[in-house]
View 1 (cartoon, one colour):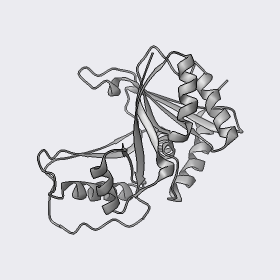
View 2: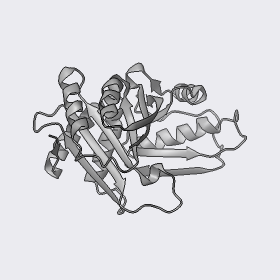
View 3: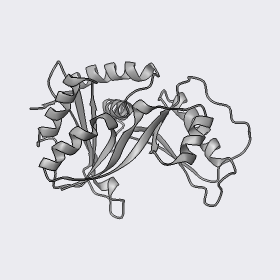
View 4: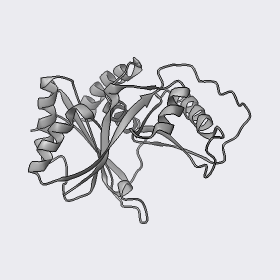
Length: 246
């Protein structure tokens, strides 16, 4: 049975994950998502109408971690994903870590399967375990393949077209870190994505965040822009995300 973490226990795990993120070495896809959920919770940055819970397969010798973030109050007119629970799993590589993942997946107290859920950046190495387990629960998975990209440097990248201003930038913090959305209809090929990516990277570094992002595996344009900005895309970061329904 899984162990739900107290705030004191969470602080210990968050510190360990933070050190791993700070090394800027290629990490498993769900590591930064898990770490920044913990960080924002401990720093009281989550929205008031939200709830989050963290659990491990066992304590103190844990090998797998689970997080469930949800809106206490559904927002009328918002997207399906905004009104669902966000589920994040992170486990240590190897047999013990996979056993820990199975422990978390078996514990029905962690997830309300009558509600729509959104799986976040689930490492590709565990997809077979995920599918085998949820088939027994008659749970439907609608997943897409993603890659993980991150900025390994500590210096803000320079963008050669100084003085340009994006048409529309909307930056905000959420439970998974910092995100930046840019809306430039019919403006491809004009450098807006490069500029938005530079701005996003700069804001992350200024705030003490590791710049990272998940993008669909077949989105060649997004990957090309990320690499041009100096970001790294790596095989270990392959993952799946998507809807989980009963």
